[in-house]
Image 1 (tube, helix red, strand yellow):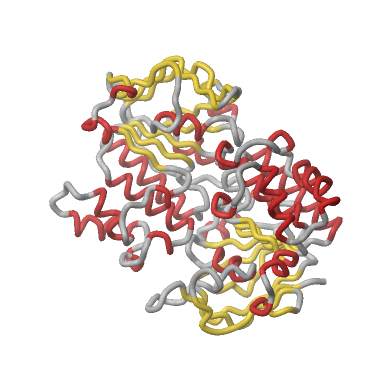
Image 2: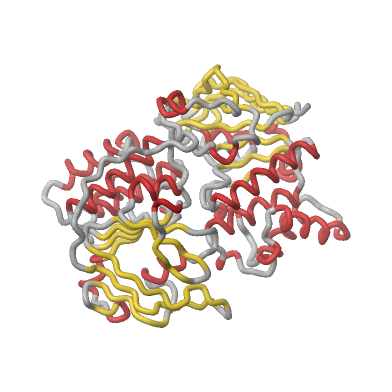
Length: 476
């Protein structure tokens, strides 16, 4: 039986900041699959990065303590040795890719641990098959959807074949069917090969029947009580800010009569290379209305949003408040806002507070308003910290809050709540939806969380085979 041992860890990202982990001691053994959950920013991802040996080598300072992986001190292991013991999948897989195509990325990973050349092809095809992405082998990584990138990152770990899989929100951008299939495959890998699994996840649905235990973190500590993954009580989970399987978000939205059309799509068609992604989409989006778009990973949700933001060329028309978006003037651009899957791609401020102030520059009381916003999203104590030092979940909250503060008529959000705990999911969606109602904004968001779509959207749209269509709530 293998083990990860964390002994009296004190870890901080920057001098002067309160340690994220302060005296943490815990252990995980490979005889079971453990899921680590808890509120956003409580230290889950930090713990995982330390267990993988990526911190403090690449960020932060380990002020005290040690980490033993399979009985060996991580600080004494070279990167190739660490990779054979523990493979880590980032919350944002883009941050760990190095090559151009899926195939070349897998080969590169195996080369780094000196896999014999004659074994590479067999390992590569096994990894692709394991993750159900054989058809992506020759695709460029840049052309993949967020969910497809996560599957490719997991395939890299399977090809490396470490003793431990460390997974940071492995299903955040994957549709429910794919998530269940991969969770089942991870369970099989654990049973058949004895691979240890330590995963960080806010949503526990996909781990039911797979995980053995649930560890809850709060303020850099692991609660002594470990939950049996086969007997989870919704009330206990929700009291700790955790999304309970099948639980409702219970929003309080006032119904609203739809206003005039803000955005209209007419036969919108997008090709990427020889592949047809969007095929003649026509739809109208009206003021004050909230629209959810759901669909499988790679179905085209992010492509649709990227097209509207001007990233991808298209055929057909996209009309914003009566003006063809291909002919927008500079003064028109602020009418439509975008929140991307990767919020760090949008940051413009040197500190968290400057990021909010950039959106409030036209308001008379910008300073006091920025404090109000940051306190509401629980980031006020990080106001003088670089946005890039925040956790992924905290970055998502900051990116969303910055766009909410901006005055626009149509707001498009690509997975606004991924990697968020229950409280922050509700805080983000309540804020977005309140702004949509009060400012008469057309709010369009994508999600893999069907319960979120049911609870918050006035209209649910599906995307499949390049087509956009309305889905009755009763059929979800």
